[in-house]
Image 1 (tube, rainbow, N blue to C red):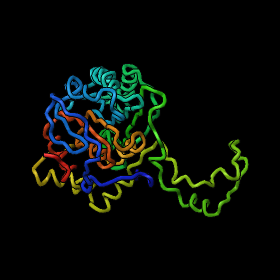
Image 2: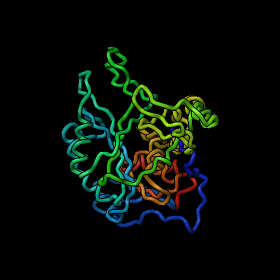
Image 3: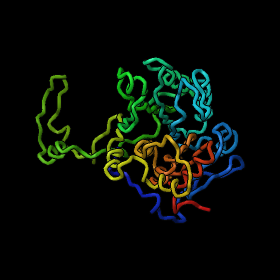
Image 4: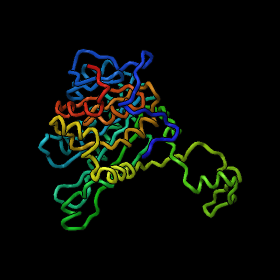
Length: 338
């Protein structure tokens, strides 16, 4: 999704530094810092350890926890993910501790992928169970459900999609917006999209067919004549434009972006599951303001921190793998404070 026409953004690599800038989140003894900028820092270690030490300093101060934790899987992977009931128990156990970090109007936004039953062409309810337990343990309300559509995802599950051809490819993930209050900070003016050509024509004509519709709605003659600066987006976040642009310019969605180039030039292994920039950008613009604090407890390639930096938000990221933390420096070239 493209940024709002009203959203004021700046490229991280071109960010001016001034004494009046909001300082990054405070540092304390605890997990080692991989690097830091004027606005944030990345800590290397497990989120459980960060909650015991470093994150105590920001309790009640985090405006947005935006993250994509390890997805719920029914099969063990070589990186040691939890599966089944163990996964649900682990994720739900983090809920009350993460909720304590939120400001009174703060939000948690979590991307959860889909899971399939092992050896069967049917979907698992594991991700939904994990969500329900997380909400209950954290005493959170579900503010809204979003869908992130990514047409560049590889066909999955391969056995049922590519081999037996009895399913279509899974090209979306669920994104769940939660909060401890019914009225967390939010402003959809920060994520307005460009009007369609037909809406722009309507605004120029200053007239349209008013009256009662077959659905029963009665449209007044002036209801759609006000220019609000853009259209309110739906709850489907489509990163197709972002992917298409990469395909057209690079012939590959990731191999020549600055992060990948940095990894290649420094002989570093890039993170295998990198988040599309449009996803954190949408929610940071929607749910926070410049100077607010954004936390990602499962940082990966630290796309969340990079977008927070670009949008002038403070940020904290936790990443357990030192190699991935080191590689994510490529998103902050020219900004890292040594």
